[in-house]
Length: 326
Image 1 (cartoon, rainbow, N blue to C red):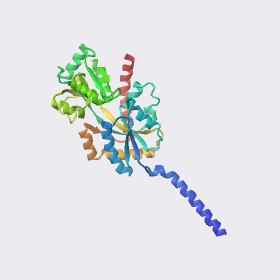
Image 2: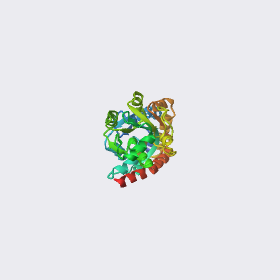
Image 3: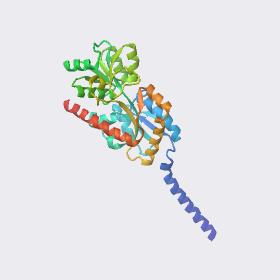
Image 4: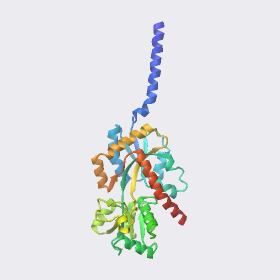
């Protein structure tokens, strides 16, 4: 009887110890099931290209599928808030870009704070815009465009896929730095804005380089400058804004990065940033980015956090001033 009780006690102790081990296992063994990567826009956009490029690679590193899901609307806020409200366990993450910085200015009743309710995982990709005019517009250079816009404020109208997008912010930044006024018209998406630019309804545009490139080649649009500090590999003969206007510190890119809900365990963030880093170092992923007119960002949570601070320092005063001038 004594042996039987002893065996029973030993078995119970083993079960308890096993239970404790299993309780600690999920974070250490992460991930044990598929991960959802949320996009706050529709399928087929730039974020979709980058999400799938790194998602496929991350899946092979992590040993679990990365499932891309779309939750478009409200300037990406629907998708962003979905992730903010998700369980902070690393199984729901977000890919987003400039709206993370811009939307608190554009949506006063946002209901969440991207700066405090999300944790940066890693930057992913950055992509310049090219300042273009419709081929019928008799402007041949960026200095000429700025001079004409100063003489006739709001004569030049540009469109964007919405407020807070890289097209919109690039226009605001050029206006702020030059004193030239351009009229912004937000659209529901990029397709209609491009249609109106090509048709002449819009005189100018701040267009992602891979989107503009074929129309520049056909002669339907004219490139004046790219907004990044360095020239685009897709448009090597097009000057930068810094070169064209002698503004050495002018540097603006659209970008995309990964975020997790606040409270996600540091060990999980570290596992994710490691997987992103491996993806960004892969030449095959790099080729996808180059073909999309983009370049990889420096990997890692710390680097991305510094980048976000720099973006907010650059964009917050710009949008604060815009709001006061309304």
